[in-house]
Image 1: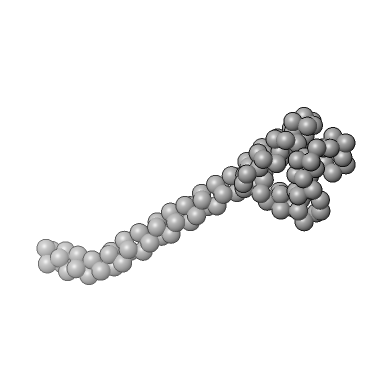
Image 2: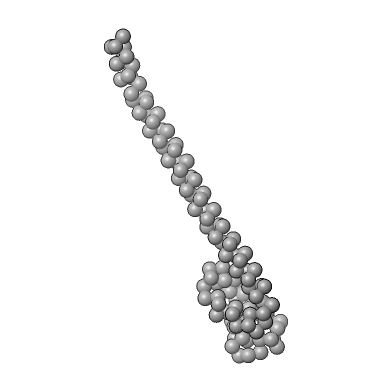
Length: 115
């Protein structure tokens, strides 16, 4: 993006490029902003209008990053739900076992009295 000085010759476009792509650090910050979808249209829309081929670049980033981020979040949620379910089942088994151990002497006594 920074190589196309003549394409982004207007002051507005040059300001966007300088602000978001002037160094590796600012580019990484922009990618974080892009990943969180935080006011990205103000950056990519003027650039895409000036150079339509950038739609491929920004479109791929939007699709890949947003889907990947959603997959990570969804995987974490599902994993936590499965862990909670397993813990709940184990807790229920433990309660059932305790109940059976408590009832065994009482039931044994009742059956001996009935015999």
